[in-house]
Length: 210
Image 1 (cartoon, rainbow, N blue to C red):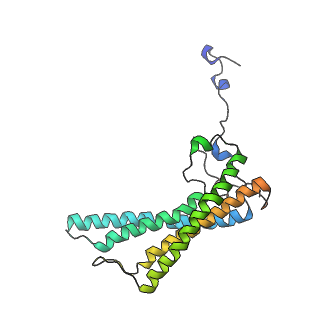
Image 2: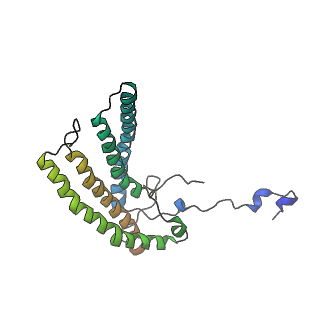
Image 3: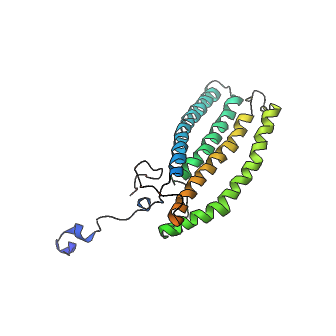
């Protein structure tokens, strides 16, 4: 190999390709592709809520500081939009594997070790938590609907059950994302369900970051 310090080929001393985490992925399954595709569509549609949130905030600021007229309904609409956008986006983050991990540990694991972490983490931690939230969130939203709950603030928004229904909806979507992720981990570890060849349309086929 030529010595780059002595005027040789400097590129010869540098590896041509550095492995990236996103190049090593769990295999997709029929179930994961179906669920992930729908979750990504829902997440992309919900992303427009953030634009709506910005518009509502700007409108409320203009009304307050230019006309001296604050609107309670606009303030409530702000946190309604934020809550719905956040809850719906959780499932898309899991489907595309863009949620936060403890990378100092995860990056050092082999693919099979990561799959075992997915299985144990999903079955022992994530699924019980999701089930617990759904058990309480569904009656929480149903009671609000039956009672015709509205905002307690004067001039606030009606139909408070709509925002409360976003809680079980968001966690139901997150449960579907967890099931899809679990199927991919078991496909690698146990061969069930059957793994499919990787394609560019898989949920976590994201652009490799430098």
